[in-house]
Length: 431
Ligand code: SPQ
Image (cartoon, rainbow, N blue to C red):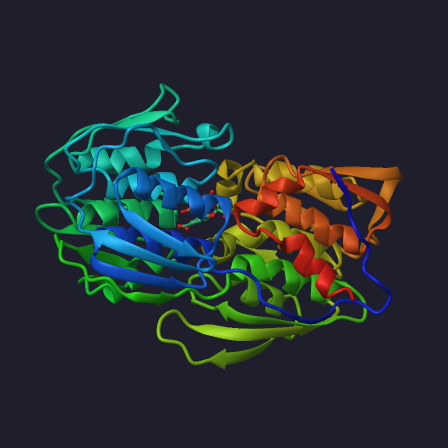
């Protein structure tokens, strides 16, 4: 439990290097492990989720060296893993679980998979079902959740799969099985989700075709180790973008942020809300990157609908906080996926922001945020909860910056899932 800090009258100022991208760090480990030869990953995110993926590969016999944010993976090729001696522990990480179900769906031994309480409530059938159609055998609980077992399997067949929900994790699981399958695997996406897996497969020398929402891969087992520069995580940068916009007298630059067009919904949404974000593009050899600068600005309420969601899905909690400070109402719809994240993020955003006076109505698939509310604790002090969810913990810390009255946060440890050191970085820009 910690007491959260209010922003000083001089605002938030300076520049921030947020840590490496979580989605890309997971994938760099995965491709590094199944490639032949050495992969060097720079600006690797050393957060709890990604360290769980790293431990899984060590349990499978892959040699991985870590020196701070530099990681070296000695790839074995996909057919040379060793049977793990204990269950593969995914911790809190949906990305590890779902992508690894696909990647490990054709191995000559059984693997038990477990996760923490939150992960053990999240839906996994969305991945095990299409993988079963390809020939995989993944056993889950009767609720379709972890714990599970990825059973021994020696054959996968390509499928054509129309994505029922926009999900990079489902898409990536099928692609990672598809590169081991006989025949072609074809995925049809109506609303594009983040494409880091597709980009990284190419970077490792793989073949993939992506056109008009149709993604095709076939069997390819000779990927080559690479050097991967991980950009800073736009989902972590989002907290500073919003903090800089809503805290009086602020000017913040967030350095070297990944601005992949399938991830940059936060920039587009805040721009539609009236924010001027200076985007200074930088040279890069992989994913596009830029320095982003914001100053305190007036925002206006907007409508955020289903097609906006995939590229900003993890940023909706902090966008909801920004909307409490905008002029007019913000309506978020088509965001029912938020209900199956680390927490039900519609319920947890509404419950926590209401404690500091925000006016929010909960909808089945989103929320209506009534803007222009000066945040203040409702009684003498507010006890905000992270509910064990990193993004809710950080949203609470940013809300506290502009809240009148004492704000205490329970469960701040959750931040280490994606951003260890968040509170330290925040206090640096308050000096
Ligand atoms: O890994 P996890 O727990 O699912 O993490 C979250 C997050 O907030 O960091 C979601 F709760 O990010 C997902 C994201 O929501 C990471 C991800 C990826 O790396 O492929 C894709 C998104 O999930 P989905 O279900 O839309 O595919």
